[in-house]
Image 1 (tube, rainbow, N blue to C red):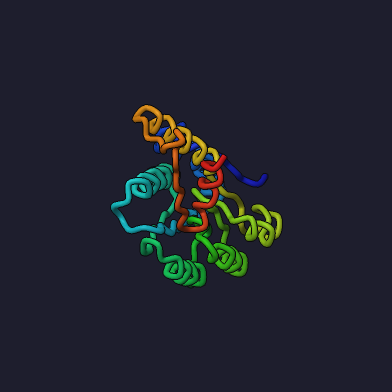
Image 2 (image 1 turned 90 degrees about the vertical axis):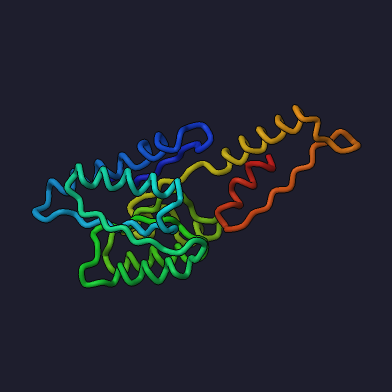
Length: 207
């Protein structure tokens, strides 16, 4: 099977359309594998947020609907918002369990993503990452899916740099409409990056 890798432009598509296009290949792959095995495939999704987040609720509902259609056993584990170490703890518990899943799906969280991928490789569990990508330094160490870690079968990562560019462009357009300029007739924008993944959209906005 070829490496699975998808890109999408979040500000160009409606969220549901993004999820369908990005997760459909994974759903089809799992469906084919489920038909070829006697036992239903077991898939665990580690949700970085508890129920109530609009984006992740949408992703969970789509995955659950796909799992129901394809006869896949889907388990949802909810972590704590912004707590990557809690997510790592939950991932390690699930990947080392006696009834560990066949596939593990989650976000590539800053600094702990390599540890999750290494744990999945060690336990022989297929790992698929969604809505995120590695930092440049992490990519140098880990490579791309199926290169150094065979269990990391693929990823779905949005084009955050292009999204940042579109966001910056829209902010500038709105600022000009409202005449929000300084004495030199320039528009001042401050971009504040938090988690590591935000460095990519901030780079795009700077362009």
